[in-house]
Length: 200
Image 1 (cartoon, rainbow, N blue to C red):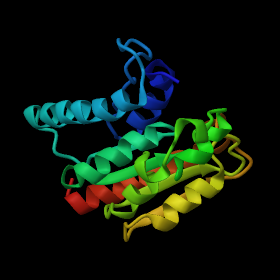
Image 2: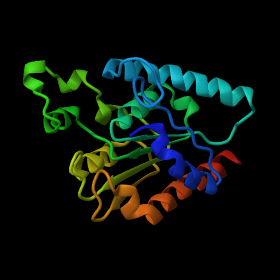
Image 3: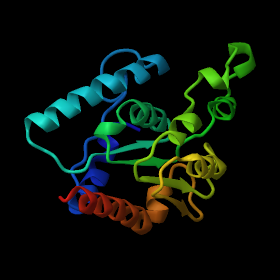
């Protein structure tokens, strides 16, 4: 998936009265460079800093919601931990709680790599410390990142106001198609909640 794949989704989000910015990892889409996990985790900080400065410069002061899908859940949870004071809400779609099983499913020998979950992405630990309104969306039949990961993220999330949307019958790749109405309604509900809270 690259940014260009989100043109239609971006328009649907705009129709809800929400601005939408999608970003490619380095080495994907029109982004230059070599894609690596370490680069992805570094780059998200640079991108976030740029976005915050741009929003302030252009006097955009409405609620800021971060959204990450699949591997992107690692980036948004990394940012949520470091910049919670800038973030009003969080959406994690098809996110993973634990990296080890995901890597194994993708055919990566975690033992040979010497992979240590405690030194990995730590999504489950990061979401535990996030206290702002959070929406978890996950496909019931996700064949890449099982629904149990979404449930674990929801259960562990430290936010007093959190919700979990399970899309029945959907898998990792058709979640939006299968659950479009509920998916968009959940995003609208979160956005409305944050607008009221922020007085915008």
